[in-house]
Length: 320
Image (cartoon, rainbow, N blue to C red):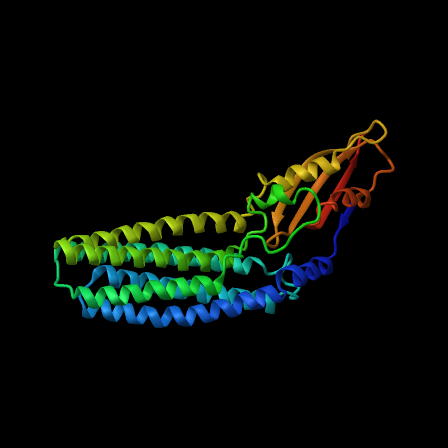
């Protein structure tokens, strides 16, 4: 016996919780930040070339990766919403957002490599630097990054709440994390950090004649970018590859199903759980039971206490 939640149910959930007003606002903020970032990127790259600052150029090229990433963030929200009711997407279009985050991580890794190469070249072939002008532009870039961080806001983790008791347990596990907005937000914060490194490098070289500090800070900035790329790639790949079987929701499904009823305890022999939204999960399970009256609908009702499970396929195998 099997029970399937309808795709219409899943679609309704997505439109209410995933593609609602919050998504439109996030997309709008991402577009504004993208244009601000692009303008600042051009300024820093040109100024870094004009004033011979490798750290400033590295910061500018680093910012270019953020402009692309934030553009991908906005595009992903729009595409996911546009195709949300397309029946060709069996479990909706939320993973478009995750794919954008994964692509952003790859771009960050490429930029990190380019930053290291350029910094090493400048380390062995130093050029004169116009320190006051370069520091002024770097400070401007830092200010822009902080403004962009405020525009994006820090509310990308847990946009939707739950009324039942297990909410707090999920919250600390990143249960409702918006990886698309997180990518844009941390991109901006990482860029602010590299701007700080550029300012420190220019100040040290200007005050003490440590010309080597500028390319060294460029390399440190590249390491920072690489570390963020690694983390973002790991987080997004986990979702894309449906690696969710270590999530607390799996144990909750078992607890809800494997309940003793009249001397018979249904036993889950096969269980698959995967994510279809920020807080939305699907599951497929096979249950062995001796109870002839046990139905898939009853089991789904037990699972339904965990409202994030929006689609289920249940098979019951009778045992003698």
